[in-house]
Image 1 (cartoon, rainbow, N blue to C red):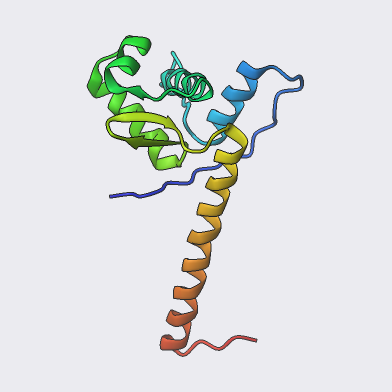
Image 2 (image 1 turned 180 degrees about the vertical axis):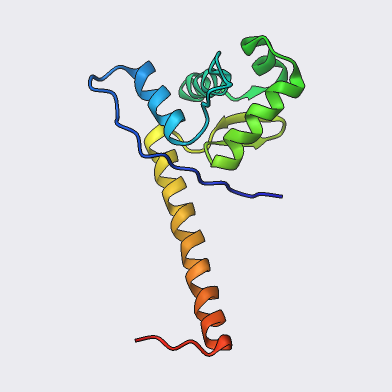
Length: 136
């Protein structure tokens, strides 16, 4: 099972400050919106969770599926993508933004990536040593 999946596309950010366009850019940059997601369901669910987190609320699966007008199974699919990317958390059957705001959530995702690369560097160093590679 994948704990975290980091996908980053380098895309030009929107020219003007517009929260909806900024959120769409963020979701596209993280691979959450693709050509098949015409309704931008994952983005709409993320925005719903962000709005509720800002108000101090977490939301359950039924609230999310009702909001998005999709089945619970489909909602779970989208929630899993958001969870794997590190954007949301789940506690007691309720979902919320991982940190208290979007910027801190992105910062935490950045720390996740640093931890992953640190682990990969350590293991690759051990592999090189075991295989007889030398460094400069």
